[in-house]
Image 1 (cartoon, rainbow, N blue to C red):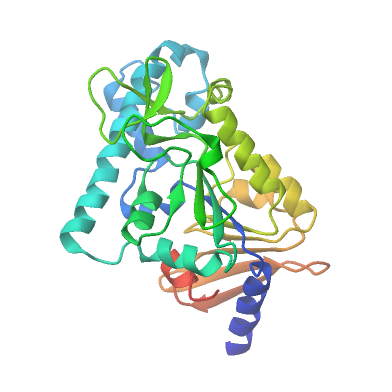
Image 2 (spheres, rainbow, N blue to C red; image 1 turned 120 degrees about the vertical axis):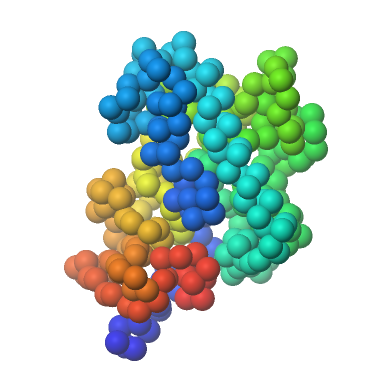
Length: 317
C-alpha cells in the first residue's frame, strides 16, 4: 500500500511541478455551504410558478426561450440565494475564527511561482470565498476591479507577477449594472442590477458584453499557455472553458481533478487526455485515484484518507 501511495503522489507532484492554471468550480464551494445547481433549481421552482416543476437540470431548463422574459427575476433569485450563503460563510468564520479558508491559502502558497510569484485561477462561481481567503491571509489578488465601491473593470489590473489573478468568467456577487456600466459594490441596494451570468444557452449572448468579453479572452489566454491544470470541483459543463481545456490535455498537458464525485461529463471530456489523475471520494475516509500516464493504460488505486478534500490534497503537493 505504501508503494502505491508513493507512486500516485509522485505522479501528481510531477504533473503539477510547473505551476498549474487552477479551474475552480461550484463543487469547491458547496462544502462551505454555498448552494448547488440542484438547490438553486429548487429555489426558482418555489418562487416562479411558471417554472417547470418537474425539470431536474437547471442549465438545460434555463436555455429554453420561454424563460427569456423571466431572466431578470431568475437572476435576482440566484443572486439572492448565493449571496445569502456567501454572507453566512463570512459571518461563521468571523464568529468562530476557524481554519475554513486554510485550504485556499495553502493552495496559493504551494503552487504559485517562487518568482514571479503569480497564480492564475479561473472560476465560474459568483461567490467570494476565494476573495475572503486571500484577503484574510493578506495575499494580493485582482479580479479586474480595484475592489472599491463604484470602481470599474480594468483588464490591465491582471498582472504577471506578485499577484493572484482571479478570472470570474460568469461574474461576481459584488458586480452590478449602474447606468449601463459594470461597477463594483460591496452591498446591493434597491434598483441596482446584479451582474452575474445565469446558466443556460443565453449566457453566450451576455459574454459579448464588457467585462465578460475581456474575461473570456483572459481565461482563453491562461488556458492556452498552461503547462498543467488543477481542477477543483468543476464539472466540465461550461462550454466556454471545457473545449479549450480538452484541446490542451489531448496534446499531453497534464490535468489533476479533485472533487467529491467525478461527473460523467468529466470522464467523457478527459478520456483522450494523455496524462491525468482523477481524485474522488471512494467511501468514508477513503479516496479513489484514477490515473493515466503517457503510453500506459488507465489505472485505479484506493487509499485511506480524504485526499479528495482540498485541505488534505494540499499535503500531497
